[in-house]
Image (cartoon, rainbow, N blue to C red; front, top):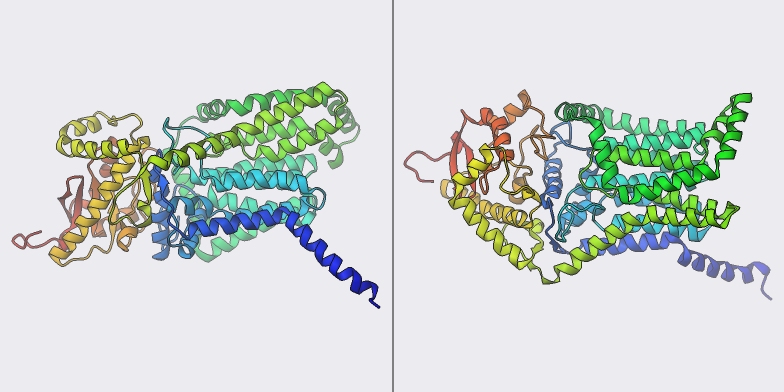
Length: 586
């Protein structure tokens, strides 16, 4: 005869299996597993606007493996976390396409954090947990921005760290709005805020605004806020004590501010106008919520007047329209500093809660319908934009042709429309044979095309030029029995050290935009450039941007280096000790 325990055990085991099968956590784990499989292969991506932006990760990873520390040993436009995650993931998946590696590496941090949220929420509602998780997975898996910067479909190889900030803000918002367990809330908030700080400082500013709203409303208890803050401070202290990473990072930010002295108001207005498609319904929803909750807001104000207390203050600020206004403000502040991101996706967890609560509590059906429609109208634009762009890019790539190359490793796993590949070849010839014309463009302070760096043919041609230059570098080394140990590219990005398994000079910035992201060279930069073995100068085409960069770095190369023509599209400054004797050829 079986005991009661013997009978119950199989039933409990079966129930546990069924529960796990229904759990959103299983979907999260399965998604991560699929992505791991995809990274095991080199999956070509269609070239897109400003595609070379993600090559910065290759440069940074190569430097990190050489022992260089971001911000400490070289200037970076953003925090170091993304570069370290990319480096680690590339070590595990060396065949992974760099754009996918850069886009998905944040999941090493964001996936455990969203799991904390799901664990808490699914205790009350599995459906709500799925509703929170599914948008997060969509935006994390599809490597596309919400905004359009070019009419043709292609991969969004730019704004990756901005997308990652938005994904972390999504996790933070979901935790602040939906998590009830104190320990899980503290862990999720602390983890998200620390990650935001080390991805991009403006993301931490936006995250702070979200936390302040939750604190003011009483949703984030004071003790929990202090605990989360102490955890973040502890993480920053460890990084600072270990290698001075925090102070160096803050110094880089101050240097960036010195070269970005434009007014903030036009940027705020631009951020609002670019995202008007969701901000208009969000604003209307805020008005509806204000009208609906006006009486309760007035009542909470009167109670506050009778005797101020934390509870009374919390009731004043814990109003749906305050929450939505604060989140929108945080989004506008963050987007004012961006070119490309997944803008305002962190509104979705809040809109989800507002829709559920307001529809359930609405006394009038018209109010419930208005809230539901406006919440949906504010939540849909980012999702539809990312879904549409990914479909256009990947379906449209069916007729693309691979970019032929010999030396580009996984960086060359790209494809492009045949007509644009042909155009790239033709333009390379024109750039080379009619250089005085493009010198005139640069002298006038103009690019040959207003959208030159977004043009697919430019991005394809740039890769062709790099491929050819690698052949020329190897041929020069063989012919003259030398080896270029340190290689610098006087351009926006420098993939050559990674392609040739060499080193990049220390202290010199990555992401070389002389108008936004490059402070004047200091003594350490000048010394590093003076010692570099070879510095490459792209000439197809010569641009005002590269000419400005060259003017910054030329004083450090004048005396110890000699300029040669390396290829039709690259000149080079070679350290004099590595040049052949006058009659030795080369």
